[in-house]
Image (cartoon, rainbow, N blue to C red):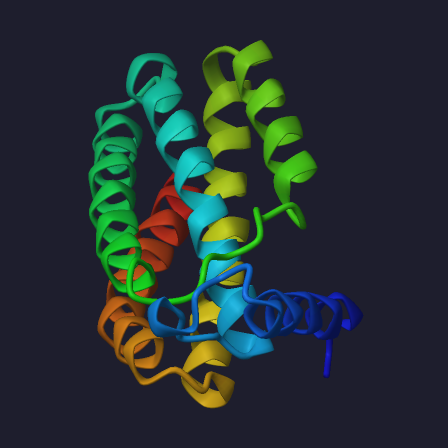
Length: 174
């Protein structure tokens, strides 16, 4: 396993199922790769919607504000689709891996104005989308849950489009 915490998460989930704390009929325990994917995808939505809403009001160009609107609407839609899948699965532990990083990035955006805001938002989007592409590709290659793999395969082209749009914004800002 690439991430040591994945083994602990999987073990904790299995313990809950075996102990009867989670009724077996209602669970469909996810493997470590699927758990990691679902929790990190769920954590990205609040960051993307919060930073997108900031960019809708603080972005200095229509292109940035338009991209921000796309991020807000897309991530709400993606999160709703993921939640529909996860309702049929075992409960996930709360995502924490990137929580502090997202909070720091949001704080930075809240403090910035003008061109500094634009640069921070665009750089954050390029980095986020690159990471998101890698996360979805990992799920497609290594995930064990067919519903989550199908979700990742369906969603990945949208994320790749978001990355291309962010890269275009970045090149236009230079």
